[in-house]
Image 1 (cartoon, rainbow, N blue to C red):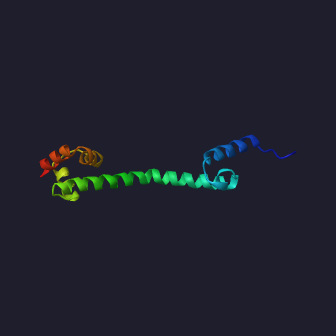
Image 2 (cartoon, rainbow, N blue to C red; image 1 turned 60 degrees about the vertical axis):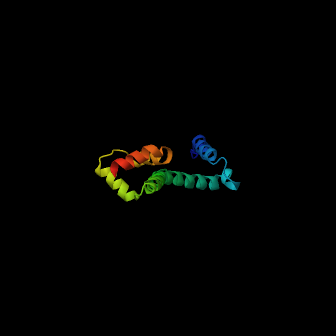
Image 3 (spheres, rainbow, N blue to C red; image 1 turned 30 degrees about the vertical axis):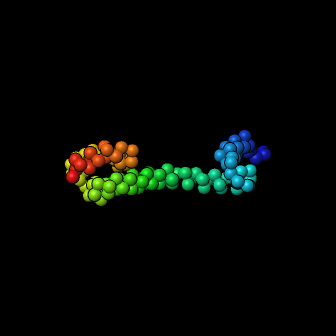
Length: 114
């Protein structure tokens, strides 16, 4: 009895990967083995960087809060310590937005915690 292979499913899998490799440079877009490796690596980077993005944004918020706090004569750590002790329930994302886009509101918070 001849060996049975499901070429329909195999082709569908390859087509899926080749579609994901669309736009890549050189052989990465049209040679199966190269494209498969490139797509697999790209998926790993995407998975990793979805987590790294959260760290990066938190770092950006901290930088913005620090800059806003230093304009009013406080360091970031002093400011955040006083925010916590005064039970102000604003997270870093909101504080960074206020420091960046609404300096008057941020100044009001700084005056409240001083």
